[in-house]
Image (tube, rainbow, N blue to C red; front, side, top):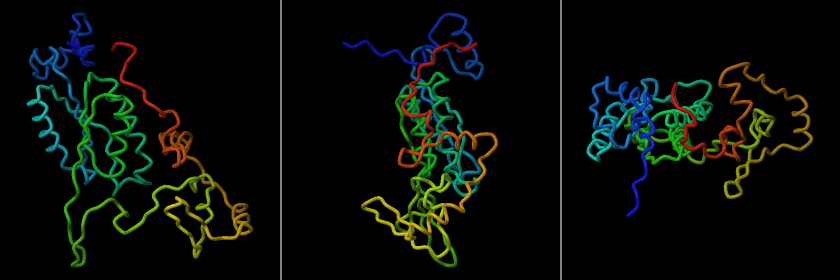
Length: 262
């Protein structure tokens, strides 16, 4: 018979030293009984609820339902928040913050006594962000979508839900090399013809080489951000054909923490 694998959370709660006492004590002050720390798997519920993110505005109720399921299965559910990225409101684009959310998820899982995680997610930026962050830690993970938004009406017409833009036909979401570094789309002008070949995964600006050279000579790159996450992103993001990830996040970091709390 195989010996049960030691739960990751027991590195926090299972020891009889001062650190174990402190870790158990700080959660017991919320009313959790002692038996919850005696080998029950801690299931983190990663919640992207925000009133600024309409897709996720119902996640408080969804999290409570997930907690009930974890309790019934014999686990110990603990909810934690991460950054929420809302497509309709965030400027300049929610895509900019996808990797930041991924780091938030990975570090929240890695730094805390979590044996497995349920990701509450929706839309096409939050979903990959949470999945990438959890995959980096390599803990058991379930991704739970919040579901489609309700249909509505506009000027008397029925409108369905869908990922922004893609409900209207073929949409190109990412191009490599990107315009910000002088890719062909940086040279597009009003009236240009752009040819899209989906099977060949190619997009071509139908302008002569001589005209493109002329435009490139006139092109000036935008000024990079001076500080903050936007500067980090510009300095380290990879092109879309490489995954549009940050170069220092390639691969998995695992869930091991090399030092104890202090």
